[in-house]
Image 1 (cartoon, rainbow, N blue to C red):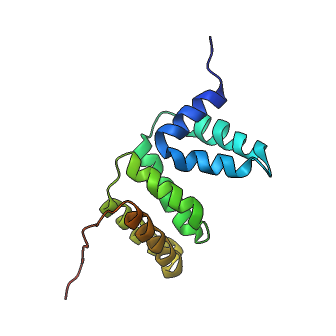
Image 2 (image 1 turned 180 degrees about the vertical axis):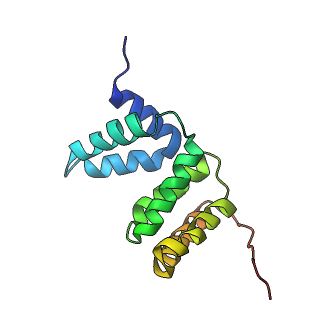
Length: 135
């Protein structure tokens, strides 16, 4: 028996995002269930299952991409949770967002950092604050 892209995508989505992924898909049902199916089949059934990067690396790339967009706070929140779920640390995620200052500017990085702060608070995580140049 062959497992469908949809089933494989659901399994991947559940492993990465848990309830947050389910919530996103459920929120699309009344307006456009096909969009939810595309997310499951394409993003999680095809892209997230590709060889070459582990889930941690994929979530770091996703957090960086959503940060530079500067206007994707709900999706960034979901993927910050996902990054923590697959083993990223708060300190690593902070550094990813800080790195984006060079590519997207301060406004996008500040927006991303504020989303990260909310995610860390929800999870009761207290990231270690690093000061690069304390002078």
